[in-house]
Image (cartoon, rainbow, N blue to C red; front, side, top):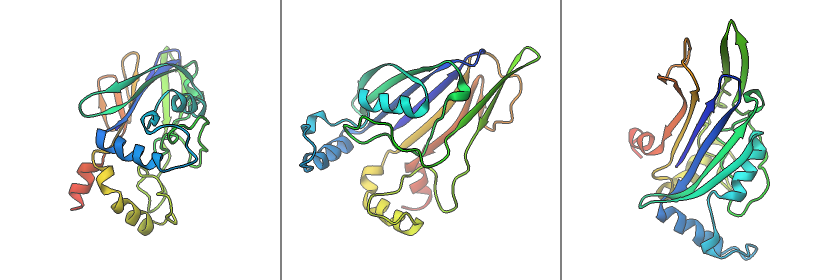
Length: 212
């Protein structure tokens, strides 16, 4: 599960709150995979889907500052909540379909697809925020990553995903933008008060609709 809230203030600065986690079953499976990797010197208990190291790497990739973070553990989800800050929203680059760095990673991942980008300007006393959303490539969902060992084609990727279907249950991605003020006018289709939903993807609902 990944939820991201981007808050933009009237001067173009702001904060990003991001929480990434997984079910206990998915984390156990991830740790089981990691324990079989002889190159990984960490114990299975140390493996994190998202933690301080990954948050630092994510900050570098987005062009923001990592401020703080804390682990999150409930009966349903185990993960990490990170807090970032930025001074200029036009310098923020945010990619939705780029998964977080793998367990123990400490460097920013390579950005292959165009990220979300933002424009900002003052106009007659009001702030004008422009959100540039990249178009998904033909045959790609834009949400699910290329699976290891697949050629990247829709057919091969679908086959690989079907093998990991149990682990993908509960996959949920939500990216929202909140303005510190009142939205006077917007062409965004999903708006509630001062919040704009940029992306929301629920794998369980999609798989149920497809009869998977």
